[in-house]
View (cartoon, rainbow, N blue to C red):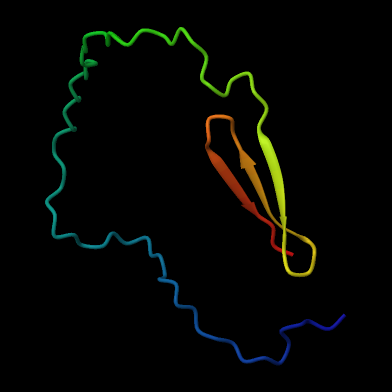
Length: 97
């Protein structure tokens, strides 16, 4: 089978050549080992006290059904879906075809 790269020009490698000779450095040699780091202690925070009592009544829309409406577009397809909660919050879902 013929080699895919046969006859193509070879490019020069841009990778640096690694020699076994040490390169000179402008830093002085390390003569002492690095000091051991000091242990870090976790900070102590006081416990958070929640002064808000839990809700005793359910939210106004907890046991009620939402109202779901479809709004057709000019071609008769569903263009928007409007979801109305009993508490009055509306969510509109736009339908893109």
